[in-house]
Image (cartoon, rainbow, N blue to C red; front, side, top):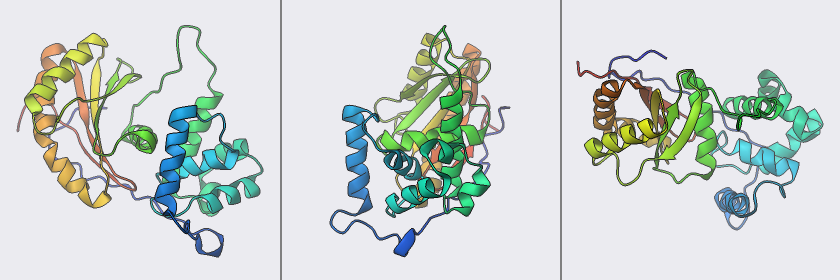
Length: 253
């Protein structure tokens, strides 16, 4: 990805919703948000081993179906395609025709690709984040378990392969100079050649505001990175069904 000017690229991606059989009724007492929180806590405590196949699909649907119960759709997808593996390897167009939102259909393909990749003896399998779409899909998976409002840094090697994903400590949007300094130190420690910052936003309606708040941080990173021969690819504000981004170089225009 080429570095660009600090002007916004006003790019948006909208995810679709789905109403399951019978209107996709939400849980009567706690609603889907309570159910989702319990599932996240369950995975954090015990891992995903104990989840049923439809529950794994439910979690992959969370980012594409922000507010509705995803269980009916998850079960419907397994019934239609036959198994968890068949759902994950289905063509995106077929998944969308079956009711899966575009955002989740793309995420299914990424999970299947990762599962099919052969293990490397030299170390764990790593992701290549060489486009905004690949970064967006990766960030969508982070939204499942990471605290909302968090700013994360993705450190990449010379081939845009993810080395490390870390949360920026403190309040990086309030003290951008210190945050940029700490970020560069971490980049050097990880032997990173490039860095991308990602802001996990709670509400899609707040994306414009979140991107504006991050401009000073992005400019500070854009100035500091070239001094260490590190590429600053850009900044992403990721919501539940949309994202905005801008790229920047080391000089203010």
